Image 1 (cartoon, rainbow, N blue to C red):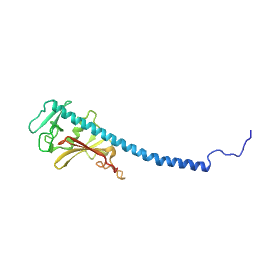
Image 2 (image 1 turned 60 degrees about the horizontal axis):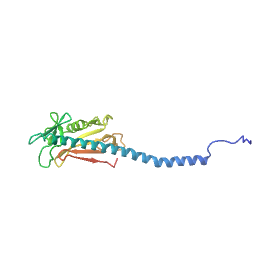
Image 3 (image 1 turned 30 degrees about the vertical axis):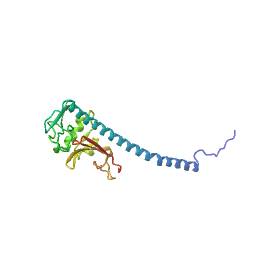
Length: 200
């Protein structure tokens, strides 16, 4: 057997360049796909939460129908799974029988809907509600999945649930809690709308 005493083992310069090029190409291809997967997961989580919320709203309304539509001319209510909810009443532009507050703790009229009412809906309609807050000062603390606020369009009040995992930081280091994916519940219509923010 012939021995080569001065032969070195290892990578040649060309082999090293090829390895660097291959790793660079993989990085360029894989990293954007990973970013897309993470964003798709956030969107799927929001859609799942909005779907669960919508199902709970419809189940509450169905319970009200099954109970014989308890209420008066100006106020409806239902005992849904041990919790009594105030429901929308017959008014112009309002569909009857959709939850908007807890009875005895929340607003008595839809026009008085507050952020705390919206938070109570999330906490009491869902069997396993995500940690949520209506307090802007603690929303960025990392303890909550949703920030809740109330708004109004054309006199119709609504609850908006912002997904904090998708809140945009605009490269400042501080999250803009109302910039990101969200879903909106409009009790007057019994409608859930999903807002996917593609700018984040």
